[in-house]
Image (cartoon, rainbow, N blue to C red; front, side, top):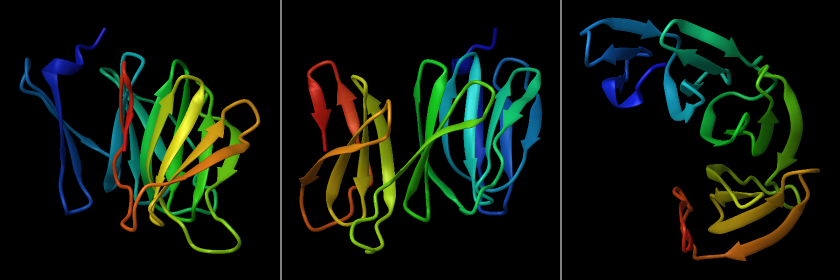
Length: 168
């Protein structure tokens, strides 16, 4: 089992991501320019410029999604074996442990462009911090939008959950 505290991911601006093991000193190159990452099972996920999510453990790549029509994965979040990704085209997708798309949601409202900069799974709901200053709340069984919270005028680029609730 890989200890994540012994590993460091180095994201560069040169379309290169390095996986550096702090215990052994080994360095591996990871595919593509990475925009986001998240711990997943005994490894991690990376979301890339090419719209592909790749999963890794200490042995190497364990799986990847296909690219779909979206470029750039903006954010990742995990609920047990299901993981979610937000994309530059305003779509959020859920994936199972086989890296298969199981659910698709959209933060677009009335044709307006809206980017889901940050997503977070919290107590059976998916929260999306959006470029229009809102947080969209989705139920995760069918992907239905259940609430839109107007927080302010600026983009919501980060969401933090604690045992006391959600900070926007």
